[in-house]
Length: 164
Image (tube, rainbow, N blue to C red; front, side, top):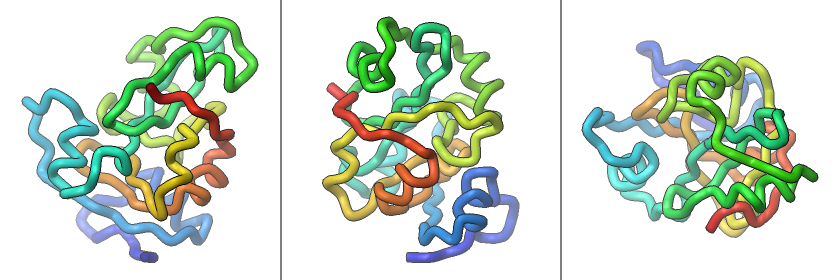
């Protein structure tokens, strides 16, 4: 599966992080439609992949600390479960501008990999049931496919049931 990003400006901090780590991955691109109702749903449909294998990266504020939750696009982030997974009490979705600032990515293109400021991360335990998963490569219309174990290792994530 090891495949370097195609030339033509597709390299992102996420793909650079994967290359640097020597982790096998595949880049998948598709034409992003600005009118799409859901970035993740659009990715799953455009790539012809079951929505359970495409994961979205969401940034939440858990007791004042930005925290990343990685959940299937077919579900939602359970904020209570995310807070519990990191030993917190209260969680709310982060301010979009704070999420973009801390990650270095734009909404709809936030990747759990190669973030400007690495945040504590929780990957939904359901990811481990798939041989590979898809996450944003750091740009709308660009996904990376990699093993869930590599995703967890590279992000320093813990796994927990955080999707509903």
